[in-house]
Amino acid sequence: MPLFKKILIANRGEIAIRVERACRELGIKTVAVYSDVEKDAMHVTMADESICIGPARAADSYLNIPSILSAAEITDAEAIHPGYGFLSENPQFAEACKKSGISFIGPTPENIRLGGNKARAKQIMKKHGIPVVPGSDGAISDKKLISKLCSKIGYPVILKASAGGGGKGMRIVYMEPHLESALSSAEAEAHAAFGNGEMYVEKYIPRTRHIEVQIAADNEGAVIHLGERDCSVQRRHQKLIEEAPSPAITEKTREKLAKFAVKAAESLKYRNVGTIEFILDADDNIYFMEINTRVQVEHPITELITGVDIVKEQIRIASGLPLSTKQKNVRLKGHSIECRINAEDPFTFVPSPGQINFLYLPGGPGIRVDTFIHAGSVILPYYDSLIAKVISYGCNRKEAIEKMRRALNEFQIGGIKTTIPFHKTVLSNPDFLAGKFDTGYLERENAADR
Ligand code: MV4
Image 1 (cartoon, rainbow, N blue to C red):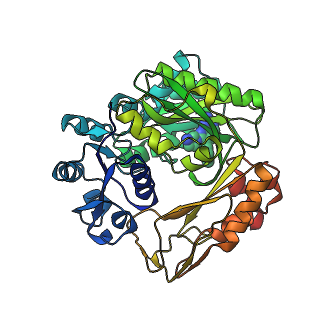
Image 2 (spheres, helix red, strand yellow):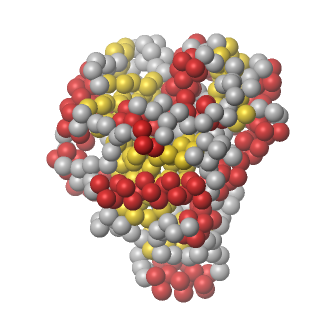
C-alpha cells in the first residue's frame, strides 16, 4: 500500500510545520491552510501549496469543517492531518472526512468519541482490569445517589465532567455541606464549555503525578508503547515542562504503566497513535485517567528517547502501512526534557501578543527547537500563546537539564514577554533537580513566594 501523495494540514503554528517536515521526508506534498491574518505565517511559507479558509477567529477558519473539507477537495489532498487542538479530537470531523473520501490521519471516529467520554472510557478500562480511582460506575446524575456515594467513598471527592478537559467542570469537594453547590456549578460550567453537563465522581487523590504512555497501533491490530512522559509540572491544567522517562518511578512501575497502556489500546481496538494518561499517588499506585486521541504537544521528548518519528508513524498507519518497528526493537535511551515557551508574562502568565523584533534561537548538541517564529513575526491574540518548544536530549537527566539551562540562556527574543524566565527558575529549583514534584508543585511554590 503506497503512502499518500498529498496531505492537507488542518492546523497552524509549530505543529503544522512539524507535520510538513514529516511529509517532506516521506516525499509527500503538503497543503497549508490559513486564516485571513496568517497568509504570511511560516507554516504557509514552508508548505508546497496553501489555501485561505476564512477569517481570523478560529471558529470561522481552523475550526470550520466545511471550509477545510472544501480546501482538501480543491487542492486534491487525499488525507488531512489535524495536528493537536482545533478539530483533532472532533469525531464529527473524522466522520465527515470519511464521508468525503478523505483519510483522517488519526484514530477511528469511535476511538475519538470514547476519548471524549471520560466516564464511559473509565468504565470500559475498569471492565478490562485496568486500575481506576474508586468512584461512580460511569456517569451519575441523581443528587441523592451522588451524596450517598460520596459519603461511602469518603471525602475529599472530585467531581468531573464526562466531556471534560483542561480542568473545566472539575471540583474538589472537601466536605458534604459543599457538595450541592459544587455539583451545580460544575454542571453549569461543563454545560457552557462542552454543551454537556454529564458528571462522574471519584475519590480525590492528593499529591498526584501526571504520567502518560505513548502508544501506536496499526490496522492489523499490532500495538506498541514508546515509554512514558512525566507531565507533572503544570499550572492550571496547562503543562509547562515535560520529561521522559519519568524521574520518579521504579522500573517495576514503568513496566506496569506500559502493560496497562498496551492493554487499554488493544481492548479498545485503537488505531494510530495515542496517549493513555494515568495519575500516580504518593505510594506509586497507578490509576487510569483519560485517553488522548491526538499527537500531543510533548511528543518530541518521546521521539528523542526512542528514535521513532511519531508523526511519520501516524501518516504510515493512516495510509494502511504496518508499524515501522516492533516492541522488541524499541529501546528507551537517555533523557529528554521539553520547556514550552509561551508569549506570556513569566510571573502572571497573562498573554503577551505583539511583534518579535529580535530573535536568536538556541541550538548545538542535544537541543531541538520546534517553532514557527522569526524576527519580525507577529504573535496574534486570536490563537494559543505557545511560540516555541525547546527540547533537550542527554545521556541522563543531569545532562538533559544542563543542556536545557544552556539553551534557555542562549534564547534571545525581543519585543514580547515569554515564559523563559519561569523555566530558568524551575530548572534551578532543588526540588525539581531532585525529581521531587507533583501536580500541586507550582501552586505550592507560588504560595511560598507570597
Ligand atoms: C484527579 C486528581 C486527583 N484525584 N483525579 C486533572 C485533569 C485530568 N486529566 C485529571 N486531573 C486530576 N484528576 C482524582 N481522583 C488530580 C488531577 C489533577 C489536578 C487536580 C486539581 C488541580 C490540579 C491538577 C493537576 C493535575 C491533575
